[in-house]
Image (cartoon, rainbow, N blue to C red; front, side):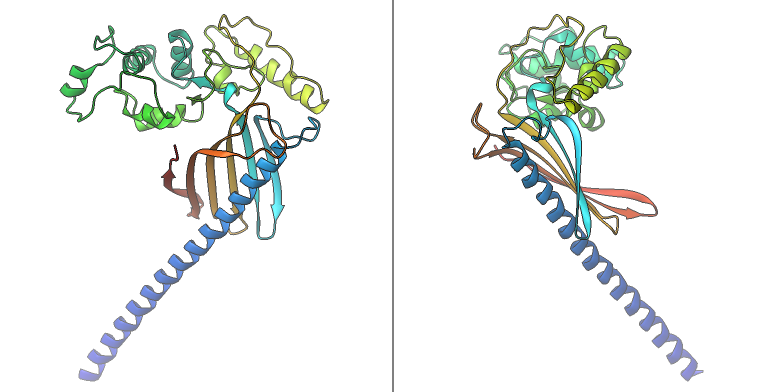
Length: 302
């Protein structure tokens, strides 16, 4: 009986040790895959910066969210570049366009109206709350330890502090808004479908037809066509200088790493121009039971 008991105990200890070693091996493997995937994503980022320096418009990568893909040893990277003029500036946007953005992102009208007023109360300089807005007293009543800035948003991430903006809502808006283009309107030649759908009263078929025409013009190396509908939102075309780049590294094992960054160069200067980093965020993912579990680490540079 003693021998059997000792044998059972040793078996349990051996099994526990094997399980522990397997977990440590998986951890090391995940760290290695994350590092390799991140290296691929960084390669995509630097490749995109190089492509932005090409003056030949027929070879230069487009800045309207078109996806580019390159294969490297052990995996590939996918890159999208969006000029910030194709986004909605949360410091300059008029209420109708902001409300349209929220509703096109899936919010009900009542909820959208509250957030529109809360955003305006956050960025205005007075302490008087709008009909559905929120100033100091409303934040206090919610038990929050901070109040509206009563000034312009410094970063897009600051939007998360606005009363009523949940993590789910912020995730829908994060890549559609900006603080960098200094325009009350949007440049349709650079805007994504989600941004164009924010235009009040816009017909989805008009947007889809325009995007198809814009893509064809790019393939034919022609200038982007004018938007077929008067948006009623003033916009002054400026030379590009600020870009958002999404670069995803993908290993053959399925591990992924994505870098979201915003870069700035001297206005009107691309070839040989040095970039300054305005924001940086990393997102890691790995396959688990045929699904991707994401672990996010954010680094913002101002």
